[in-house]
Image (cartoon, rainbow, N blue to C red; front, side, top):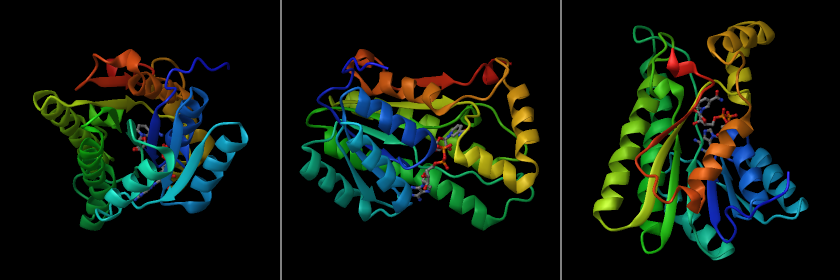
Amino acid sequence: MASNGRVAGKVALITGGGKGLGEATAHLLAREGAKIAVSDLDTKAGKAVAAAINKAGGEAIFIQQDVTDETRWPKVIAQVKKKLGGLHVLVNSAGIAIFGSAEDTPLDDWRNVLSVNLDAVYLGTQHGIKAMKDGVGSIINISSAMGLVADANLAAYNASKGGVRLFSKSAALHCGQSGYKVRVNSVHPGYIWTPMVSGALATIGDVDEGRKTLDAKHPIGYVGEPNDVAYGILYLASDESKFVTGSELVIDGGYTAQ
Ligand code: NAD
């Protein structure tokens, strides 16, 4: 698809940019003119995404990062600014999912999910605000439909994603009240076919059967694809959404309309 330069001149840092939603977002924002810093725990995946963007004529770097490590955040942001000349967009997409009910989720799983999905979004948002508050910025936190409605077998995940939703609103209010031109929004995808979902299904049974079950949970009749979400993120990253902050963008094939 031809580029319209919707984020031309911007620099975007995308956590979890090596796979799934982060990968699709990195490619789309690059096609629309942004310089991209792909951050991921997985060096091989992240490097491959940055290389593919560069090969396609875009500009991208890879930075290895565990988003739960507080000490890495200022270093990563400093590297992005030095190598790409600024920071205008932060997409917090890194995340994990572990099945478990309120009754049987082990404390280790609970802490792991909350640490990656919520603590790290808080860290990224905090450091992102500090890095962008003297200019114009957009922070996009990937929550989930599971941050709006619950599943009996996703207790920790629901808690983390619900937390991302309200934390993002609090951050948006703070930026507005402080006079910062930094917008903060959350995105709420339904099930999207990514390594996270296929991998989770593989741990509990047949992947094809699991996909059919997930398809049927969406009124539109199927699970989404990564670009369905990436286009929403592109809008929030661009100046087209300059009046949008503290909002929750639901991209879920009707999942939460039921
Ligand atoms: P994915 O597993 O396909 O990709 C996630 C990426 O995050 C991976 O590359 C992984 O290496 C990276 N990552 C994991 N832990 C990390 C850490 N500690 N530090 C740095 N990187 C780390 O997952 P996805 O489906 O693309 O999910 C992306 C985001 O979207 C997640 O926050 C997820 O919860 C959310 N989400 C996904 C779906 C879905 O159905 N796929 C739906 C709603 C929300």
